[in-house]
Length: 389
Ligand SMILES: [Mg+2]
Figure (cartoon, rainbow, N blue to C red):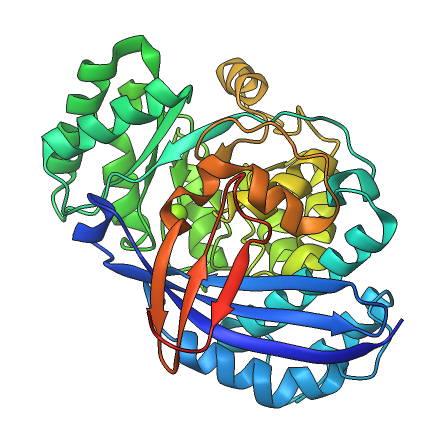
């Protein structure tokens, strides 16, 4: 089999309220890989908030796409290395990491379709359902928005809700968490997300103010670049730390593990290096008794979680944390989803409709108009049209 063409585009994805209060749109950088045997692979990277999608697209189109044309798409490891080692003066993080990830995902889609297997089974599946959590709770939400969103997720069957704690006053963040906790009671357990906004001392103060809420985890406390500071936070607060959505490749995750910077690792399949690298990170974590809970892109990440064996991976520091680790082994964002039985990544993207809700609408993009469709009526996940409508 040979790669004959790679067709790329950027899709703008409008978001619904209340998320639109914070991020009116996201971007998808999409690559459709064609082969001489007629199989096509769909890969994409979600650029959250849409910041820099054009740069990702340019790097993919000009630097990585030429490296794949004419190659056998089933030599995925070889092609991953070829892309990773292109332009040795540019680390494959940020823009280049997103671009590489989109193509790796597309290659695996071809592999799944070629084998007529969903990817989780191609990788040796261990489960066909995964726990999931509802995520949102942005800083621009009112208390009513927060409670409304948490109730929506609870009604969808989620047992966990994650919200942001972005206010500069730790007491205000406590007040918002407490409001949701009181409104939802025992229906949901909660996580909180700092999104890299604090330093070590700020996190110690903030975490201390939240200790009595029995939080599942405390996410991304410091700049993702500063793994030493994350480790210092993890060692000094009582809530388990989760991090990794802005970390790249097995090498950064190895450092997170070795420094004991988190009990939950959160690789983003569209940033960390695609399916290939996220699987490696998952197995590396398993060897160190650390749990993996992939970040976003539920319709893709569900394959990785389905193929990772370390269900009770988190090794707690005391008994209470052991209980938590068993309760929420590898949660995935949004609602519980049954795994698709089709082939490749794309098939699951169609069937896992709840994960595609925000994408299931028409999206204009520069130069062309596009439509991204999820759900049972769509023969494909992505359709593109060359004129506006
Ligand atoms: Mg986060």
